[in-house]
Length: 356
Ligand SMILES: *[C@@H]1O[C@H](CO)[C@@H](O)[C@H](O)[C@H]1NC(C)=O
Ligand SMILES: *[C@@H]1O[C@H](CO)[C@@H](O)[C@H](O)[C@H]1NC(C)=O
Ligand SMILES: *[C@@H]1O[C@H](CO)[C@@H](O)[C@H](O)[C@H]1NC(C)=O
Ligand SMILES: *[C@@H]1O[C@H](CO)[C@@H](O)[C@H](O)[C@H]1NC(C)=O
Ligand SMILES: *[C@@H]1O[C@H](CO)[C@@H](O)[C@H](O)[C@H]1NC(C)=O
Ligand SMILES: *[C@@H]1O[C@H](CO)[C@@H](O)[C@H](O)[C@H]1NC(C)=O
Image (cartoon, rainbow, N blue to C red; front, side):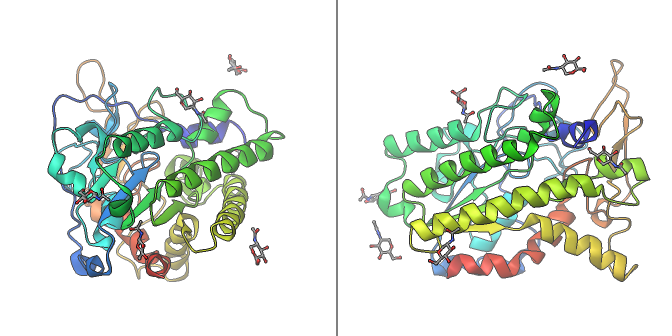
């Protein structure tokens, strides 16, 4: 992986400016699965990781998720989600039949919503420290442990809880930014998976019943990577790196399940969920509501700008497509709400395993 990956992943970073406290519920409008499983008993969702799962923790200045046009589809204004609307967290909460968990930074002002769990995910972070100062996954789990220590949660109510762990690639971005070599990449992947396994076990050790961790998405198909081919093809080199990561992850999760003699841990296979969209489009052009799946809705007007950027005069340096619902990607790296909904649909069979 060369310089390209740095650019591919760079936009997973996030810098946000928070001007006030806003609590957005995030119940998906696609509610045919809503409350479907509530009676089966998960009452809380705890979320760890990065921008694929963050629903508003980020607060550093310049973070795109708090800028126009993020949030235009839902809830109609930027609220700290890296999408035009809902993200993976919201859909998983819907699947379980609960409200989207409150972002950690609002835990003291939205105390009633603590009953649905907490979202500790911060855009831009990884298992290791990244180029953003926000809490890494270890620190996010420390926050969780502190809430248990403070008596907000106890063993009996964690017994009906589930965790979502999202890792989309910021550790790799950081590796490239620090001039990591292609030769050292596999050793770095091993260190990521080892740390991730420690994190997953720690989450389960708090008493959480099920822990779902995302496989890394096909990073070579992210618009930032596909842009060099005018969004015509994915970068296979980058996708191979993702597949290697996912292979090790699958093995680590099997090992954790062996050790805990159960099916506590599961992989949410974002790689194949994304790829199934792209392949269906290729095999049956025109069958889907999406146009070119690799082309995002919101793009910078030139290479140095990204979705949400404005210049010093406040002039927009991005364009937004007319109909975000017809695009899979919202920006250079993040799916649109409709994209996440399609991914969520593709994940149904694995999600059903949460109830085994
Ligand atoms: C794919 O990515 C690799 C590594 O980042 C880069 O060296 C290569 O030029 C890219 N290939 C294409 C076709 O863009
Ligand atoms: C996570 O962040 C904490 C606090 O900055 C740091 O002490 C720790 O080494 C980091 N953990 C990892 C695994 O990088
Ligand atoms: C756990 O907390 C719940 C309220 O969140 C409370 O009803 C329950 O009694 C507590 N259980 C124990 C064992 O402390
Ligand atoms: C957790 O729930 C299971 C049933 O799902 C029950 O057998 C077990 O006793 C519960 N454990 C605690 C600590 O409440
Ligand atoms: C990485 O390499 C670039 C150019 O070769 C250099 O400017 C930069 O300082 C290096 N960064 C690190 C962290 O070594
Ligand atoms: C898990 O256990 C099974 C059966 O005991 C074994 O075949 C498998 O290799 C183990 N997997 C890992 C990753 O340890």
